[in-house]
Amino acid sequence: MRSKYFILVGLLLLLAVPNGFVFAEESGKIKLIGLYDESLSSSSSKDPFSQQKFLPGISFILDFSYVRRNIDGEVFAALEIPGFIEGESHSHGEDGHSHASMNGENGFNLNYGELVLYAVVDPYFDLFTSFHLSESSFEIEEAYVTTRRLPLGFRAKLGKFYSSFGRLNEQHHHLWDFADAPLVYRAFFGDEGLLEKGIQLNWVAPTDFYLGFGIETLQGENENSFGTEGFDLMEMETEEEIEIEETPLPNTWTFFGKTSLDIGDLVVLAGISYALGKSRINRFEEEHESHGFAGDARIFGVNFTAKYIMDSYRYLVLQVEYMSRDMEGTRYTVHEDNHEHEGFEVESAPLEKKQAGLYAQLIFRLHKLWRLGARWDYLNKNHVILDGNPLGLSEKLNRYSFMVDYNPTEFSRIRLQYNINKYGYVEEARKNFHGFILQFNLAIGAHGAHPF
Image 1 (cartoon, rainbow, N blue to C red):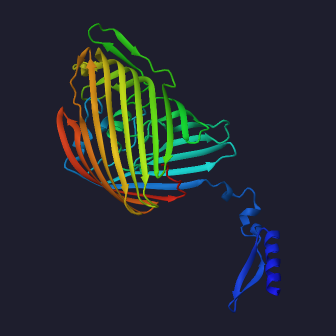
Image 2 (tube, rainbow, N blue to C red; image 1 turned 135 degrees about the vertical axis):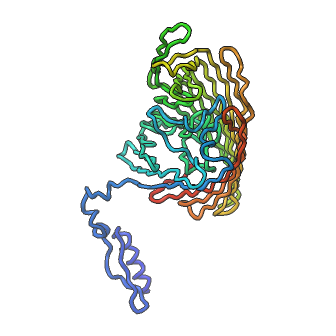
Image 3 (tube, helix red, strand yellow; image 1 turned 90 degrees about the vertical axis):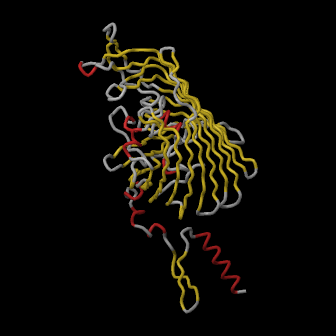
């Protein structure tokens, strides 16, 4: 009876004293030695302005790799995909610099470091920043604010961020299932993807399944498809001055819709995207075939992902994404004897591009620590018409990738990838090659959960 009485008194004390008790073991018995006061456990809690209360979540990600290809680094850097990519050496932003090429050199590559700071600003805003570090640069990769209290399912994002166009674009490199980006992304957006300053508005519909729509207005500086910079030229035959003005800013708009359904153990995600804007491409400083372009660009994309969950650890994911691009405008080609003149004497002709490509990948997580994957890249359409004449550029360009990765924890990954490349050209000659990538990716700090 006395034991029941003590138990009842103890329960009442637990309810009455929110901070709880402190117990200790003595002679094999558990004894109550005092009450626990949370307000006394840390001196910082006495100070409402303690710096510890205002520290953001901080993480750092390092990506390092060893690469071995059967071509040297200079040849790899000079690779072109006629009509799509003019070589790694041309992949720079309008400010004259960009990220170093991922896995660009044979041997060891320090690909990047990524420093992330995130915090809730107040009841109304969150702030996310991501800094890209290389051996020679420290850049703001992303820095944006998202709202927390917009009504009716709306949310806004403002700053510099990866566009939500497509399935893969807004994911950071360390979230990718392969060590490199799909060819169609590189062809349309470059190595950095569609990364812009602007504003995004999202709306989630009040349905039983996920259904969201969004719109973005972006600065539009991506030079692979858009670009904003104007230039002054002179028509060679008529000696008439040509002034191509900068595009009105903001220059690019994107629209997207996404949905997700759960069908038993199968999760399906699908999306559709569209981007349009003015295009200003400036290659007048290049030594080989200097040229420029002024016109309009439109990009359409559709993606599909299906994830079949087998058990707590094993799953199978099929991901497919298709993109097409239309560009119309005028191409300006620098005259061969232009080096004798101060300005650019050019020949102009109307240019039209209709291009498309896709990738399809299959990922199998066969064990808690191991995954296998295969990817097929395919550029299937490359219709380029200059001054009414089709250029007859190569189509049906392929790359095959196979990977196995080992994930000791959620904070580390070791990946071995093998690529068979059948897409590159060097000086108009087809250059097939293959190579291995051994990738090490590690993260420390407050690292957020990965999205599906």
